[in-house]
Length: 195
Picture 1 (cartoon, rainbow, N blue to C red):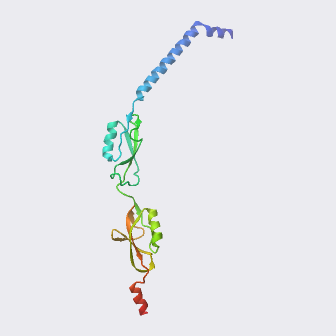
Picture 2 (spheres, one colour):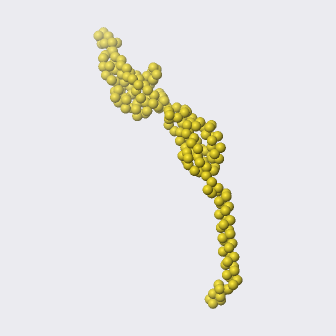
Picture 3 (tube, helix red, strand yellow):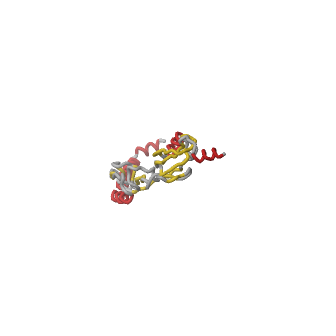
């Protein structure tokens, strides 16, 4: 044990220890300098605002800024933005990011997605209205025909043409309901009289 303590106090051990410490400091210093230059530490790019830009213009802007991009699935159609334009980006405009960072974009689709017309035939106008709103359709107007079922839906029209349950219409479409007014149709009265 005494020899070991003597060795720890010896001049050659202290020189070796000093050299090891200097080498460690130099290696750490050089590693930090290399990391600083290779990761562009402290160098940031400000993310431009791509809102309402076309995808083509966005690509050019991304390249000019030294960034990368990925287009995510299109969102629900937003009428406030042009078709096929950027409606959302992550990170947001004005954020500071490293060069070559990937920016994620959500693009406005070409129009509203299509929804299926629910089966509202022989359903009351009130229930039909709720069923239509649930799928994203609106009632533009209600017209009446001579049918016994008062306020019962008998037909559906879209832009003047008849549609049937199961047909697809763009979401937010305005349709017309053709309902009964509660009177017996003349043909039914004639048939009843002849019997």
